[in-house]
Length: 347
Image (tube, rainbow, N blue to C red):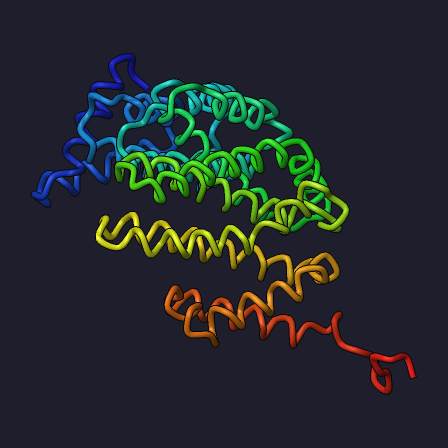
C-alpha cells in the first residue's frame, strides 16, 4: 500500500461512517477492496488504537479488523495475511493505548479481536500473550488492570471453546499456571466491592471492583469447568467451589442495599450472583464427582431461597430459576443414581 495510506484509510473510514449513502457506499466498497492488501490491518490497528480519532471511525476500524481475521488469518486462506504482518499485529495489539482504552464498547471489541487471533495462534505462535496479560493485570493503574482482565476473559473463553484433545491439554496447562493468581484477584475484588456496598461507598468505586470481580468470576468459571481433568484434584478449585454459595448469600444481602443506586449497578450485582450459580451448574455437568461435596449445601441453599419467606424476600426470578436448575441437575445426574436393584443401605 502507498506510504500515505494512513491518511487515505482514515479518510475512507470517515466516509464509511457517513449517513449519506452516496458517500457511504463507495467508501465501503474501497474498504472491501483493501481487505487483501498487505499492510491494511496494520493501518487499521493504528487507527483503532489512536484515541484522538473519532469514536465511530475507531469502532469501524475494529470491526473491519475482526472481519479480516475471520477471513484471512488462517495461513491456508486465499489472500492470507503474511507472517510478517501477523507478527507486527500481535506485538501491537497489547500496546499501552489498547490497555488504556477509554471507551468501554471499543475495549470490548478489541478484546474480542485479540481473542479471535489467540484462538488461532496461542500458545504456539503467540507464546507471550498470557504472560504479557498477567503482567498487565499486576499494573497499578485501575484502567489497565480492567482492560487486561477484559482481554484475558475473552482469550480464556476462546481457548476453552477448542475441542481437539491437544487443545484441551494445552488449556489445562494454562489453567495450572494462572488459576491461583486469578482466584486471588477474584477474592480481593469481591471482598472490596462487598465491603464498599455495606459501607455505602460511592457508586463509581463499587462499580470498579464489581466489574473486575465479575470478569474474574467469568474466567474462573471457564478454568474450573474446562481446565481440569478432575476439578477435585486441585486444592485451589476446591477452595473456590467451597465459597461459591457463601459469596452468593452475601451478594444477595448486598443486592438489597443497592436498590436506588442505579440500574447498572443492580444489574451488575445480579449478573455476579447468576455467574456464581453458573459455576455450580458447570461443575455439576462436567465434573459430577467433584460436585459430590456440594450436593448438601446446594440443596439447602435452593431450599432456603426458593421455599422460605426470608430467602424468597432476597431472591429474584432469574436467580430462583437457576436454583431450581441446580436441584434438577442433581436429581437427574446419572452419576448420583444408585444402580438398578441397589439400595442406600447396601442390602
